[in-house]
Amino acid sequence: CLFALSEVTFTSIFYDYSAKTDIMGPSAFLFSLLAFSTWTAALPSSKTLAVRGVHPLLAIAPTATDCNNAPEPKECISAKDALPFINKSFRNYNICSAGQAAALVSLMAFETADFKYNINHFPPPGNPGQGTRNMQSFEFNKKYAQSIPALKDKLAAAGNDKNAVRGLLLANEEYDFGSAAWFLTTQCTQSIQDGLKSGSLEGWKAYITDCVGTTVTEDRQKYFDRAVKALGVKGT
Picture 1: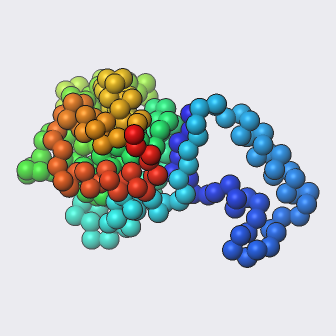
Picture 2 (picture 1 turned 60 degrees about the vertical axis):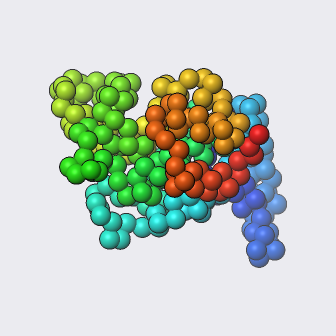
């Protein structure tokens, strides 16, 4: 499967619709068409999805335009810069549906105040070891780190130092943003995962209460509602 918050659209390869003029000669056009056909033929048979540009991400996390005046500048990342790491997490953990993507992006955006944090600070001084972009607890951060072969030696050196284990994940933005998709695909039951694929509000509520282990609030649901709209989720 393939799901990506893409920066380009297929039509832009061949034709400039705003200018109403061809932007390729006949030979180049035919070559690109052949390449495109070959690429699509190689895709898996399951449904493929794409969302245009960073704008849907900003529709979900509207204050993530930049990190000016961020309360924790070292933790903040803009939607534009977050986009490739979110896409990578979808590929790494086989996120195939818009419903799952909406749940994951809305969770990360809500938990981090629009990508401004990746460490738990509240109530001060914060919960040791808790963080990454889905703000998961140390228990799950350690399990997540154990699942990454490249961290094996460093994790052994960190021992039970909760903040050191978290630090290994935060040092790599791919790991930082991968935590939400890892958690869904390894810690949630198949029924929870399938419920999110349906795009239904009931499926999302079950994910929040029965897997993430927290309560559904009005503010949290607003993020999910925005994600459903921005990503074009068709609920059942």
